[in-house]
Length: 424
Image (cartoon, rainbow, N blue to C red):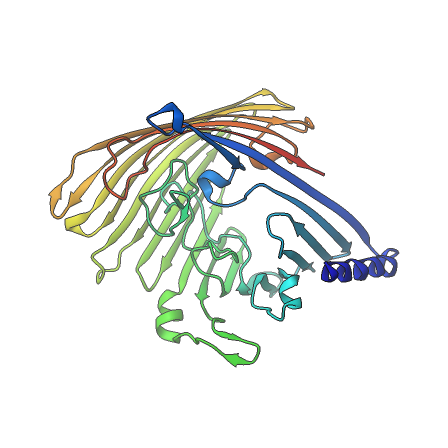
């Protein structure tokens, strides 16, 4: 408590010093929800528990409250965040964007009071050189972003039964988000890693570059920790990428050198219609465990109403023990009240098979459906979870995969959850 009081006293003093030079702000939110799990054979086993929208299927974001204090002066932003989800958490944030260069440092301040300072959440910066034609970015704890990417229907999915598992095209929950090799995130959930050196050249419609991962690993406080091997850890895991955009098309590609990882994707835009196609694969000839995913889709979104259909084919594993899966995922949304209410439904059909020990396994058929209602209390526009800060969400997910016998199947879900969001 004394430590927090010290921080508050410093803030109070800073308010007097900087009040005439910049602008102070306050922000906050509360998210509370519950999930009823009907996934049981007997009604006596139905359970209910506290939850939030991201927690049961994405594995993060418990019931929480948040208060943010911010100070903005020209290109500089300094912030302090309080979270109820962790008694030992007091996050400080410094962000500066001068246009041709930017930086961010974000960390748990209480670690410094404890004498530990190895838990940075964000620590990165970039320069834009030669009239902003070249970007050079150094990241020790990366921001959450992605380079040289287009359609991701055929990219590897990120979540596996609420657990992190990057690079596995199977064993995913339905409608899971997909990311390419270049996805970065200082939380440790990115594909390229926590730290890297990026060089990217932007020539109007064309950009291309390289990422050298793990270049800053193993060194801090003047002590040499677990240093990385330049050839094995850095150069062999280097990522090359490019993206070309010229209406009505865009194309992107990546090549990960060490594992012969390949991604390519493209989109075609014509009015409210977007069509996409993509492929992700790890094709190392010395590794019998091949991983590939190929997919595409069409989306129609004139505004108030939208519909889409996506499909993919994925395979994973060596020839004698290989999982394959075909997925078809249609969906639609309708803004029932354009200022407040959206109804959205996702549907999925999954056909899984392959080999086990050289023998073919029986075809397994699974399906999933998820209707949702999003209510924007403030009436600033209908939309999804990310579209507003104050409102209510009702979601029901039914996933039938009763014949799932191998670890690469999605399992079974029958659950209803309600979430309440408040923010200012």
